[in-house]
Amino acid sequence: MTSFTPGTLMSAEKIKVLITDGPQKAHNYKDTTPVLMQLLGKTARFEVDHSRSTKKGCEDGTYKPDFSLYDVVVMNEGFGAADWPEATQKAFEKYMANGGGMVSFHAANNCWPNWKEYNKMTGIGGWGKRNESSGPYLYIDSEGAVVRDTSKGKGGSHGPQHEFKLIVREKEHPIMKGLPPTFVHGPDELYDRLRGPAENVTILATAFSSKKQRGTDRNEPTLMTITYGKGRIFHTVLGHGVKQIKQGSFVTTFLRGTEWAATGKVSIPVPKDFPNQKVE
Picture 1 (cartoon, one colour):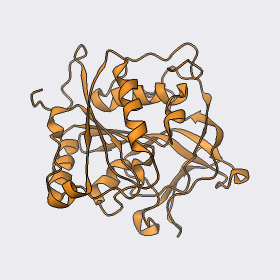
Picture 2: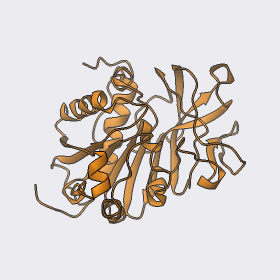
Picture 3: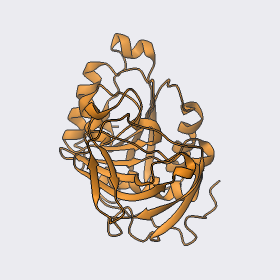
Picture 4: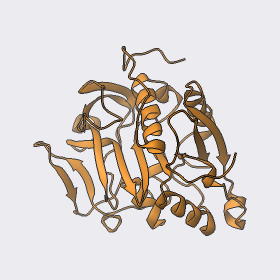
């Protein structure tokens, strides 16, 4: 691979993807990363590499992927992940500000509460002692208006895994165009009470977090996009484990979101039997 300027990919070129992961406390990244790589690799659109951090590499500064080789970085990180070295953080901030792409996958919004710029990239997150000082709660009210709620309280929770319905909020966005107005996902974790800077966020889809499932009785963001400088981020809260990421509702939105984060456009079609397409 040779270095290039992010965001300049031609339509016929392969999208170069880097998946990052590393030790974390609540999610089995060693199982999910190979499946994410497989999903991306099954299409003709992506070429995928993988980078795994270690605690030692983060502490001694030797963990330093070359982000400039890639169109998009998929973050399979999570709660308890070791802080990247400061130089690596700065390199990633520069990559994103100059037009790079990022996918925040499920628990990637749990990690690094003290990395200010990363939290701007995810928009909202949870756990890691996040609270009102982290930024507002973000959700959509019963009238369809976006709410940035500055009330006090912890960031991040979810009830038991269950099936839930996603409601498309931005039907003309390239990632969502052609999807049905509602579709079912799960059983999976439905994140709620996410909060953060909530800047430059477009909520693509929500799911209702029912109090019957220990939820908030609010329409919680499930799929989002965020801009950071010239960079594009697709943020999905779906996909707790291998079973969940093999669901058609996850696969199609993940592939289309990854393509959009890399290029700003989407060419990957919506399967005719979405979200029930068979995924091996």
